[in-house]
Image 1 (cartoon, rainbow, N blue to C red):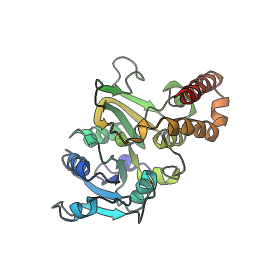
Image 2: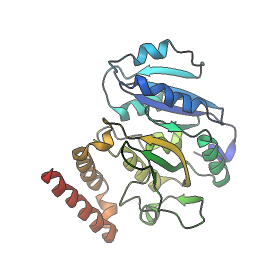
Image 3: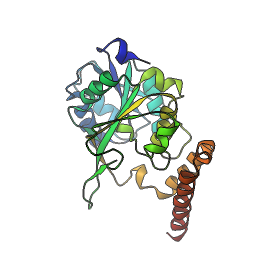
Image 4: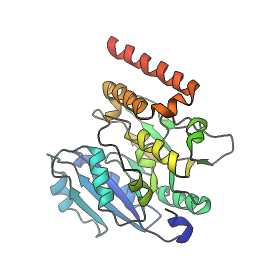
Length: 272
């Protein structure tokens, strides 16, 4: 913790989990290597792919700061991300999905903000693209007019920012102090979905963070994206509520809103 306060020249480790995405993975890697912030290493974590991902990577001409490790079988994206962080050498870690891209200034903008504000983590808006739908900037309603950087952290911020009611933190926008990440136990590998929501709640509780209004990544919704699995979303909301029930009960209005939203989803799921 505090790497930005003591040393403004530091290494960032970028972890990219992948499973059977050989046709998209290299676009994601290239978007990381095109960053205007150069002090990075890239750790691709193959989660038991059965396509040509590993062979194609081994035949690539990526520099030495890009390497591939394996989970040894199908373990899930969160296991892969945690394994990547365990093998990381950077002061801070960032996460990229194998089918998404970053804008070239993503890391530099976050580094500049963290240096200015001395926080332990940073996340931003992103552009969500899905075939047949207009582009969406998300989140887009959590900051005051004119604010480009919003300070978050603490239980009160979970309410003020709206993070307790609805997830506002997407994994591919997160940059976090590696020690802070490890201190809260990393990603919860047992959640069927919303692992970014879960880790954001824990980061908010313990550390200071920053939200950047500017979209710094593009998330593509694929036909097999976990975000399209309605049932897993309902189960994950139930798990989030159980895990943080003490916080929800301290905030009755948010608790009731969450319950209403959850049961509406349960009913819709039964109708489908």
